[in-house]
Amino acid sequence: MNNDDPPVQEWIDECSNNINNNSNNVIVPIYNNGYDYGDKDKLPLDRVVDDNYNDKLSSEHDPLIKKGNSDALDAGPIWRQAFFKDKVMINVFFALGMCTVVMSGLMLPLVFTEYVKYHHPTYTSQQVESEAAHLKSIADSLPYVANFLLSPLLGMMSDRIGRKWIMALIQLLQIIDMLMIGLASWKKVIIPLYISHSLAGVSNGMISIVFSYLADITTKAERATWFIIVGTGMGISLAGSPLIEILFLKFSFNVAVFGNIGFLIAGMFCLLPIVNSLHYSEGRLKPASANLVKANTNPFSAILMLFRSSKYIIFYALLNLSFNFTLQDTLTTSFYYTQLRYGWIPWQCAVSTSLIGVAVFVWSGIAIPLLLRWFSERLLVVVCFFCSATFHIAYTFAFDQYMWQVSICLGSFSLVIINLIQSIISKATPPDIQGTVLSGVSSLASLGAAAGSYSSANIFAYFISSSAPFYMPGMQFLVNAVLIYITCILSLIVYKRVPEPRPRSSIIDAEEKVPVLSINA
Image (cartoon, rainbow, N blue to C red; front, side, top):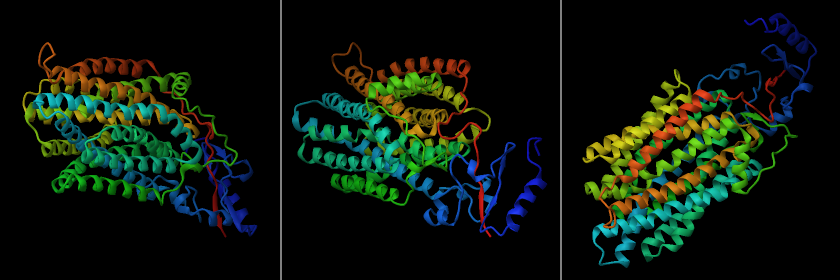
């Protein structure tokens, strides 16, 4: 027992006095770090539980301890945590959304290839690949531009009306986009696809909103675990969805379109039973008097505010931007690259993506939780950047398809950077502006992703065309490898020179007060 702990006998005496007074609602004081918060009038969050309160809000959606269930004070098994159902459902929702992202990623190259063949029947196969890659680079870039412009607005709205409704809106836009993908294939028109794909680009900020939702309903101690679970779900989606999509395509393109829409609708149903996290902060009820921070919906102003907020957050936001820029080479060119270099057909690309998903599952669900026992998140970010740069060199010179597959699976370790950086920034951000800050970070990253997708696809298209000084289909990987090595060095400098800030909260004081227990006598 610490010297600052209150005497146990004093605690027992106070409980006994409350019981002897025949109170209908016995207040049991809880002591934390030597502070007595037994006086309900002093509670900053107005967290006293009485019978009326219990009737209004079920214990399943409230992290308070009802009926003297003191065991819940301990973290205990993950399934006994508060909001367990909501945490599970939001992970299922995100995993289903990731499935459609991966599956549409397999459909788009087919759409643009068929479009070019239809409108340019005299093109050689190499010309078709080059032109289709160029057209796809536009479709890949526009969603990031839309996400950049709309992320601050969505972040502000998620802080005002709740993450749940913003996620539902994004899901609806993705359903419309999937219908336009079908239209592009059926009618050989791409303008409607460009428009819908741009609007659905806000889904690129979905992971930030999901992390904000989890930040609302998790304590800091629980958060890292659930962020890792998000990454694990991402791996499962990557592993399973390509095989499902190939099965859909074996029937017809129409089955693939409506099958993907079915996944999106299933995701919408996952949102129905979850609690609106608007009323919570770090797993606890917000006070009724909590003030909302005024948010700016101008993306440029939002980024400027981000740069004025905290050096620590700025540095990691810039590292996130760099990673999103260099990530696009594998996302936007892998299909055409493997088709051109190894003669792969769609089912081989699907199997490759599934193997990457298995690797991501291993990294996120097994390797990272083990590594976090001995190493900090910040150090792992440095390691991930180094691995990413090294394997980009391997992608460039993967003359054999098996060398490519092994390299891409091992290199997928770097994908955990997304979750690690989101977790780092989330922990350094006041809880009542999680959505605003993380959406600002997402908006900044979208600029990098838009530039990265456009540049990578066009570098690839140029170096396989007759205009290039030499033929090198992997040039985009080599260029990005240099950039990632530079980013790795910068991340190491940030790790060594920039100290981790003390956790801040604009709702909960640094000497965090804990609520009282309610026991109905």
